Image (cartoon, rainbow, N blue to C red; front, side):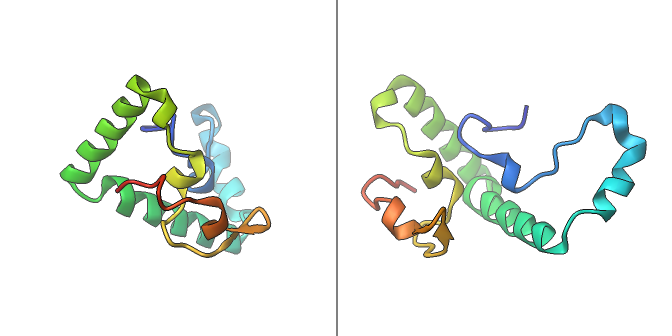
Length: 107
């Protein structure tokens, strides 16, 4: 289980691998499409900048998750947690601006 996994979709930023298959990892990594690696690096950088770049960010994120547990009716959508606010890249056929209400996003 990865940190903040209840709100962060790590599948776009990490390669989930069984440690018992460690000897096969090198072969698997050689088969990963370079475009996928690029997208995963971008997503990893986004998640780092939003949630891990400073102690303040880590604390704010932790408090936000606790707040959502206490007040589930105020829970932010997964897409808000996993995209850059203001990003207008197509996601699932819709622009992020169409999917994310700026009123529902809190820094």
